Length: 286
Image 1 (tube, rainbow, N blue to C red):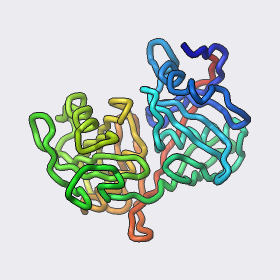
Image 2 (tube, helix red, strand yellow):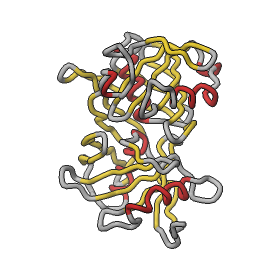
Image 3 (tube, rainbow, N blue to C red):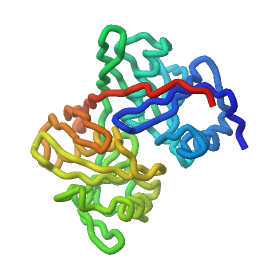
């Protein structure tokens, strides 16, 4: 078993999506081979710190700073939208980078964070989440369709109309009349592990309130039900715009709080800016 005694960390959350963050900017703290098990221990809500994932701050040769994330099951994730806001808060708050605008290397590409300050206190974070793709091979999704837009998928005892999208990690967006009527603990894992998604997928059920407002719930790949998913909300805003359900500016209500999005078009693809808060819960030592 990995010995984490004395490990220093900070616990952060972005609208309820919570993460222990570990600073490895000046050198490795947890050996690479031990990271999966360490993250499983840290994320355990009874025997560890508790979290929807663990974030690592690292140096980067291609951006101002490097970001890594591991899921509660020990698998490494590409990126997390709520996590990257927490990351920006931590990096600024701890004086690792005292920049109100920073570039961050992630497994989903380089992201840019803009920080709004109240005095020297970071209060709001705007992130260019980059460009999306609906191409099924890039998600990846096994399908005869080049893009799977509001297509029908058999899941257990029902059929769902689903849109598959990637913003560096894969998402299934399902627009429904009432998210409160969805048994996400039943259908979430069934869609996540569906045979058409060889690398599994994040699952989101979305209710359209108006062209500028929506409500969503999430089943995250490798984590289960979470209070929020930033890349999932980004994918929802972009998918809703693509299908004509949302305008370019949309406010999304997640169980843990709200996120604002501005969808844009670049190089024949759709991207989005995400804006929302992040908070330090506490600093700790394991």
